[in-house]
Image (cartoon, rainbow, N blue to C red; front, side, top):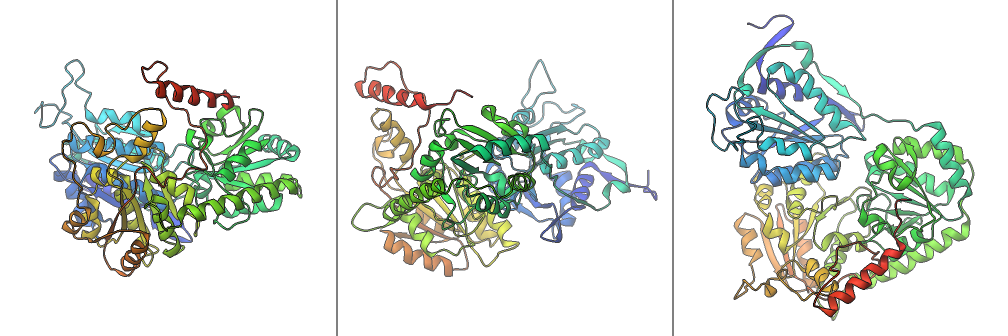
Length: 623
């Protein structure tokens, strides 16, 4: 059929692209496209049809060519995090291994509640050419393929088996990605033949539409119950999570804490809710936290948890709060608000804090409680100052963090993930600008660092091109995934990457030693299958991908190299060796539940098992 006044004939791929082009959102008063573009690697499963649809709009909807589908997904997640979940990128992969490579990235986006749209090739709906290249055959169920694996790591999943389905599927996918409670990745399986099938779509479907993210007002009864608890509290504390930033509620959180004299502690995802020097910021909480925050959380009688999913690194596997402390969960997601039998306040963080504040009126927590919290923070600040200082001692992560922290701009963005660096950055970084710290610890995913830095830089470039994205990465994660150094050079999205080389997986070696075991298979020097270890020349490797690169011997040289990197116009990689055993942040750690051997021939393993189990006495049992 030909186009009519009311319809337009398009392929499925063309319809998807045209629809995405016409979805908008208002951010800071400006109307912008929700989908900022995409990351794509073409193959036979997506280039003939989806590639054809994307080509004409590449100026308006840029397609960044990735080097690895997994890293494309990481970049998309970091892009969404920078934009506070108000914008997203799509990722397109071919059938088979290209799509399978996205699984880890989808899991990361799912764990971190981040929007990402995956448009992936699938086997032919007709099955006439089966089995096709890269198809996994399931003899008893021919409908199952690689794409079905994404059902476990997607918030929305669909297989398009008829062109008309996109009329329902696309809006449903977008609604999921913009939902404050159910936000996460959406996956569309696109059979290779269906991608090219044409259909007479209603023109109205492609009319420009401006979307808004829902703000759910909390129930008045739930607010009243929470206010009754807070009013009676002698030692209240606020746990501020990443949801505070996603709600745009930093100002409301700050005002609420100031008006009612309640100390604030931060989760890893909420690490940059308050600046380091704010008098109510008592520090990061939990296993990778601070003595100050953990002491106050442990003494609190009422805990107001705002926008956090309360994962075990935040709660110290549920030991950082007193057994009899009462919890209030203010969260857009019912599942998160109700954890550990919290008194639930289901709703938007901004509206919830305003409602709680209005109902509390002029009530303030006892002043001696705040004085105690601030004294704890002062002591923690003194520890951090000594921890990041460099002098006559081995190079450490903390020293490198201190150097960068002292020289970066308040709006520079810091990115890290996995290994020892999330703990070291969380504990030692002094926040200079709200929302400038991205520590990926929802999935704690090695390989996110450089790819996530690239995605964050693409987003940052849209608004703060004169600022920098700074990546902290260990040698283990660098070797796992480094190709987006090349991506950043190709796309002229400059990164500053600090490669801190400790000779292997040093933080897991530390855990291994802390559970009574000898070093084995973590540090390269302790691998029995490596007869003659040698050092990787990270500088030469980075140069080969087009980056500026240099190796420094100590933190003083690092400071000089960092200033050169700030002045450079392209990606710079700075390499420094750090000690795998010495220089770790030794204070601030809460108990963390790990599985230890109940039976062992090793006396040290048995002793460590006993010591670990002793910490269980403080663990809340879900009440």
